[in-house]
Image (cartoon, rainbow, N blue to C red; front, side):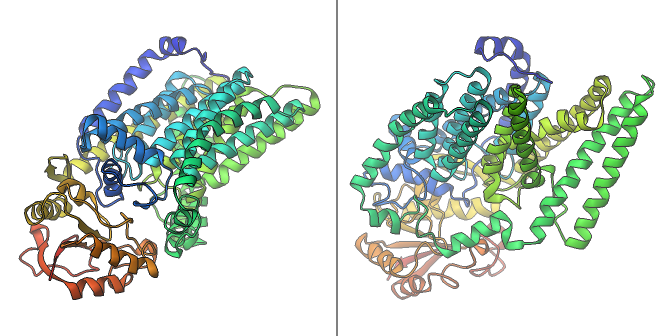
Length: 611
């Protein structure tokens, strides 16, 4: 059924005003509930807040500061610092505004396929799964490059959908513009947009039997107008060897440890268990759909005999899903913490393949394919490409989730509310009962997730870390050592001094307002290998670093767990020879118990002063 709303924005807000107000209230409630608890200082966020400040201080990206992303985010954030001051709140506001743009765009995309209330459910789900979740959020993301790229990618998607609905070729000027902007933020994510665009053009070729030359021209001109000047300037002002050897912006020379991390993220490191985990996502889809059908049967009880059919379908789906899930857990040792989204690697290709068949058959019969069908295919293609990095490990937790699955959520809501009921039930009235029950079920889960995230963050994050550059609330285990270390750095080093923090956690440098001497803000396994380790030692000498902070953070996902013991042994040996342990900062809970050692799970910071 076609639920498309008019594309005119004035009409959109008139028809959807109540839904948008409800979503705004829900977003604000979640924002207030998680207030100041968005910062996760151990997940690359030191780099995110520190790099723009370094740029503002005169350092150059790629030459003086290593980066694995495009230039947009650090330079844009540096400009925000320049205008509004160097403060955490500046980037938090930027993140919040991006979250609003993302959510409005998600709602708009949902309305191309679904009614107001179904689109509201999809957007509310994105709020609790992506925008403001206890494990990750858009306010303080693991990477602002990923955040800005998502904004641009969704904008490109929106104009692609406008093209599919209206056929106006000039929309590709906007598609190309946002493709170019996404490429300046994060190249690998921009490839998702590019391949989606190519897929749309190929569908056009298949359906209309013509080459989309004008569309390609508009796309190329606007995209290259953004990409060529920016990357051309980088190539002209930065030696190619520096870009390829010291940075991973073009995906060259990637350390084996990073490849190992990506194998873990994708699920391939746990193959074939990850295969069965993803397949059990189909079981979870059956459980969700079956539960909705059973509730729908209760709603339609005594309103006709068809409720019995719905009851039977619901029972079969629910029982089949539960049995499948238990078999997967018991026999294949898959995690019980699964959702329907895990099945995306199997479900999405089916939807895409079905669309190709429909377009091909309609072409042979001389019929037009509905825009609904093509929009669903584009959403599925974009979602499939987005989740490829975590193909057999799609979850709703972790720092990457908000950037991998927001569009996938829209597709799965449509699957639950529209496609699955239509497969099993012919009667529209009975399907309506199924959909109403599914909506109640979805609303309950969304509210439960929102409450759970809020309670978890407010229970676990109770320690406020404050400095002249902003504040945030984190756990006592992290906040207490961090606050004491910041105080120690400010008391024992002069303004403008360089302080080295290893292997990451330059949040400390940012809060203490002290320079960082190395190019690498993250010295994770593989980032300082071979001659780079010797170069780092020379940089430490040249910056006359008097204070080095070693943070106990284990990195098993990169293959090597402990800095100085499993990797960068030479650097740690040199530090031990030239510096002495002057102070140690532990959480209060372990201060009277001797304290953990490097490699233990407990977080602590050690301060080494120059001999």
